[in-house]
Image (cartoon, rainbow, N blue to C red):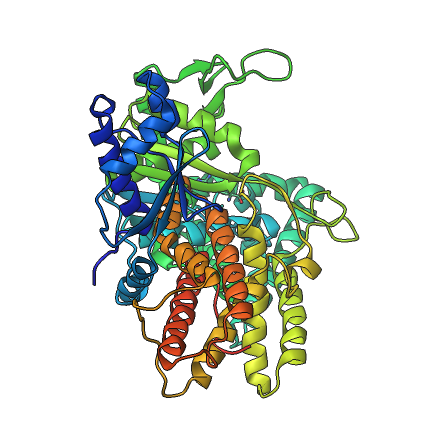
Length: 590
Ligand code: ARG
């Protein structure tokens, strides 16, 4: 098992060496190498360097060509073009050998681990207790899940934190209600995860509604509920035990949704708002003593020059309310202390709705002033946009209510199952259900991940499950088609033949596969799964062209058959690994 130097990197190195030989004063200058349509690569860096050295760019380019090692087996041809670009073509042999080295490296496919791995705490998949999950929770789950997998693949140590909303004044009302109506949460009978989840949510919903009605109509209940909040905050055992029932019941529901979404959550990583309770008072004390926060009308506040309310007055971050209560900010500040000092994170990543950006901006700045975040410990919000309906407005049901996540997922699975059934020739009902779920959930995830996270996107199931275009179904079909070819090949096994000449379509496919590692590194560095999705879509497109132009099993010679099977296999493995990093399954048959 060894990581593989990409062709891009080796060509880059050769050009950089030749460049410093031709122009020593340039030092370690960057030739600025890119993939290009004219040749395999184009280097555009010489122009600027020549200008700086007051040299003629075409002459400098020619000197660089002369300084390149003759016939080293990698570069086949270099030519000076235009005002001083270099067009570089690599040998077919180098392409095939590079892919063979990747193929020999198991699931990692030659992708190196990052040079410096750190510890990142990722805050993702954070639904709220006793509340239904909606499309917003789709995004923080799907994006978070993918980012975690991508970071782990680069060798980063990742700790997940699911900052669920399990605390706050509404629990006074809920707990008080359950105390007075002990059977309200009902008795559960379902064994199946989905049904148990549905049951749990529907009884939570009922309790929520009933207690709210009482709270709004009965002054005495309201008073009891308010007193209950105080008991809860004081850690009264009976109150806590009932609160815990709400949390446990909600978890049954959360797990059923995550299960359907094919997202793995560890119980130990669910550390909700309540988990930071013991730290809140101390967090406030530290902030107040250090002068980062000040009392203003009784509340403990942090002020910012550039954050003003609509009236133009400074609008502070309130760490503690004037009645002594702590809110969302105090919890997040305490969570930062925990993540930095106990979990020893050097990066804190928050996969949270972009509408919470001001909150995080203020929380991060406060943590910087307090010295918790430093040059070596950074915090980043991976803020995501809103899911829109087909009409371009925030996604709502026809009745104007928020859409339940579970309903969306079920609908996607139904649609996908219909497509699988239509295409399936020899699949059993059970297989159709399994593939339907993999295709439907994959479609929803891919649609979410394939646009840049900050952008809003339209939830359009017709488009998501389409077989053509930039969809997961298209990628899954490409994968399944390759598997079918490999099955048909029977005893003929994929085998690289570096001695063979390659066609243009084979070269384009091979050079794209060579870029996988660079893509993963870029995607991890920018927390940008959409760039991985774009890479995979291109990969499937290059494969389609190859498949149209190059017969595989009917190729001219046995060696060519093996080599093309080898290209099929490495394409499939790259697709599989890339999709896995997005959290999407690639069924063997469709
Ligand atoms: N529970 C919150 C919501 O549903 C998201 C929590 C985000 N994480 C955090 N550390 N504040 O909007």
